[in-house]
Amino acid sequence: MKRRLHNLALALVSLCFLLSPIVFSLQHSPSNQIKTLTLAVLRKCISEVDRLIKEKGPSAKFYGTKAQLLEWLQEPEEASRQYSLAINLAPKDPYYYPGRARCFRLLKNGKQR
Image (cartoon, rainbow, N blue to C red; front, side, top):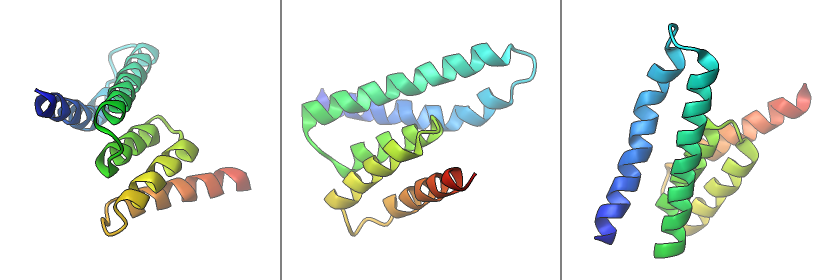
């Protein structure tokens, strides 16, 4: 049962990833409503990942997923912290380093403006 919940949470995150270009590119719907809905879905996904971390314990996959969601929410500072947690748990996994680098670049560019 727990494995199914874990798979469901990861599927939900994947669905958010797949639908985000479609949702953000819709021209005929009120953009504020879509953006608000999308942000709410992303926040709900983060809550689900937080629940999984509490339930199953720390995991690089959980922290990496949360970091990606935070990137989509344009929160690079917190996303970089989550990527760092994932890297600490799985330093040989190459998937988290580019995400953290993206966040560092966004933070650096934001401070230069």
